[in-house]
Image (cartoon, rainbow, N blue to C red; front, side):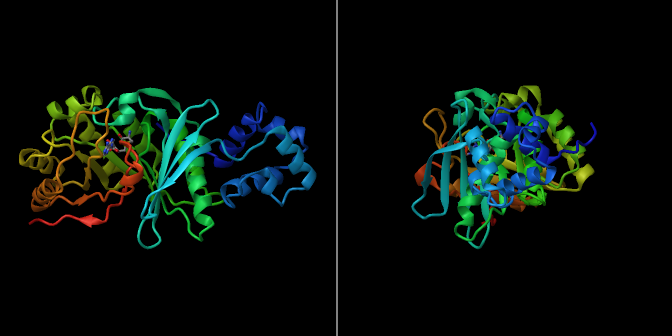
Length: 366
Ligand code: SAH
């Protein structure tokens, strides 16, 4: 499929004016006799200057601002319900309400140095029912729109800006399956990336997927420098199918073949996430089988300590066993890191929203 050229300004304006009750951008512009540069000013104020709303967009005439506010034009499509900060101040978790009452979570992680990562949701709920995941257990509600996805990053960017910091990384590792909401996620990526808007480089964005092969092939066609992470979680079909129902539709061989096509087409690394579940996928045999699947490819394994959730019957692997597992991979020459958990005290955890995609802890074979 051919790469789609997405116009982030049109996406943002279209969805923003629709929320204020206009059929389209043209009808909105006509209603207020707005020249294109005025539309560009609105877009810039929201996405680049991170202004809270029309009222704060001082480049616009006061009268215009007033009537737009009266009309109900708002920059954000999501409203924070609660924002909690972890005791160490490094992790903030936000719960956001959408216009129809659905709720999604996003997490901000402030690493040492200036690196910050926002973990965002692409759907309310999720249709893939991974056995260990609390979102998966709760089922699917609906797809988010591009602005609803983007606004999670915008919210934390505005908060960081008050402290002189910025968002340096965005990961699609919150609720939902990004490749099951493909078009909106690609529009959100365009909004994040736009040099005239939010301005986050593609290389600083990571999409994490359960492994939808058709969507991976479509994504290859986009020719974006966005990072791809695959939730692998098991080295055999038997184990994977038990914890990830999607494996019945796209078994490992097909999934790994798609990853090979991705590497060949893009010459980019694939990141494999592997959540460590005690007694399920964490013994030495699994480590050796995983090493065999990974060896010789441009692949990187990220071992994830499991955040136990009340609704799933799994326990996390001990740290000692995680390091042993990592040691087997490393001895086999497979690049491996162990994810550093953040924000456990505020359940940034919650089954999903723990995430540090470019992990810091390097595994050593001991
Ligand atoms: N649907 C996408 C993205 C959302 S989840 C995907 O599956 O990749 C992001 C990552 O968190 C996935 O690897 C997912 O398997 C993992 N995850 C889900 N529940 C978890 C939990 N309780 N503890 C640790 N990781 C979890």
